[in-house]
Amino acid sequence: MFFPKMIRIEDLSPRQKWLFGLANLAVVVLSWVLSSFFISELFETNVYRKPFFITYVNTALFVFYLLPFAIVHRFNLSVFWRKLQEERRYSSALLSDQTSDYGSDDNDFVVSLAVSPKPTDRILLLETIKLSAQFCMLWYLANLVTNASLSYTSVASQTILSSTSSFFTLLIGYLAHVEKILTKKIAGLVLSFTGVLIVTYYDPEASSLAEKKTTMVVVLGNILALGGALLYGVYTILLKFKVKDESNMNMKVFFGFVGIFNLVLLWPTLIVFHLTGVETFELPNTWHVWKILLINGFITFVSDFCWAKAMLLTSPLTVTVGLSTTIPIAMIGDIWFKKIHTSFIYIFGAVIICVSFLIINNDEEEDSTEVI
Image 1 (cartoon, one colour):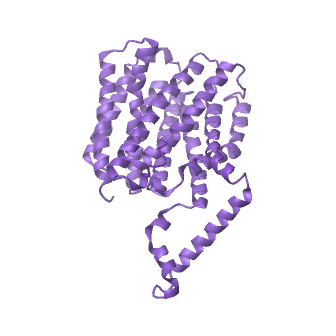
Image 2 (cartoon, rainbow, N blue to C red):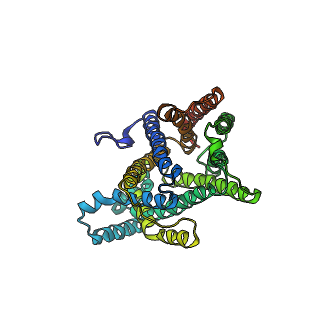
Image 3 (tube, rainbow, N blue to C red):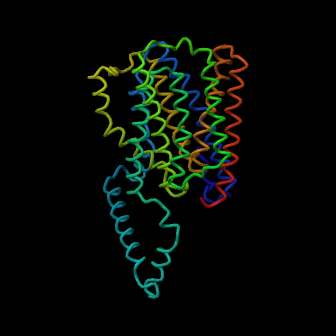
């Protein structure tokens, strides 16, 4: 979420940072629900069913986060190269000073800089670029297998299995010393998963989405859905583990390079999909489709930035479980816009999801005040 310039997030109290993180999460949830309505209009009518191309374009749009920096430096690549060289020299000097004689008067200033936590916690440009490359590959692969799973299994199964990302996030986070495994969290996750099971089973539109598939094909789809959930947990914890605090890295530069790596390295996948018949490459042929793609691209441009902010300001588990609230929000949208009638048990499942988020959020906020 974008804050006024006079507000410095690093100057806020832990409680205020957490609330800002929840505000970012709210933007993500609402954005994703809105995006799903736009995309479903294209997919359900088969007007333009190109999930991989849409994912590629949406991620490529992140390059615009670098536009302000490019304008300031007048698109001069030598400035960028000089910055990298300065950082290499700085890192080398920092490492050398940490092993030097701390009693030397000449080294007092450099020593104080070396032992100060601020410069070493701050992620430099080169490290930001490396992290962008790692994140880009994991993020695209997660989207790839998740989208592919829909071709082999039902939407209901995919939704249920994708919700296991919260369990993967907790487990991987525990191994990386980013999360704690506590009874309340386990109870909250089980409650959330139960709610997802209920709303998926009693989805009023589920019957229209059912398709006849062989057992092995369904198993493959379920494995892909689980793979997507696992990869989500991996790249979420990776970002939290590397960055730790939102103030340690320039998020706009990070996402800008995610866009560059996506644009430069991942375009061959579109050719592979086209040649193998997975997804025929075809540009939209109507202004209506272009309009939806542009709007959806802008939504993704903002929401993914807010997702990273929310995750760093709160916790990976809070955001992961919080994203499940897209289900009750989408339910409200279906009732309001599509005039779809839902059963009491469906509403009950949606309420369970919201309650589970409140439990997890409260427990995670308490943990944030302690050293993991």
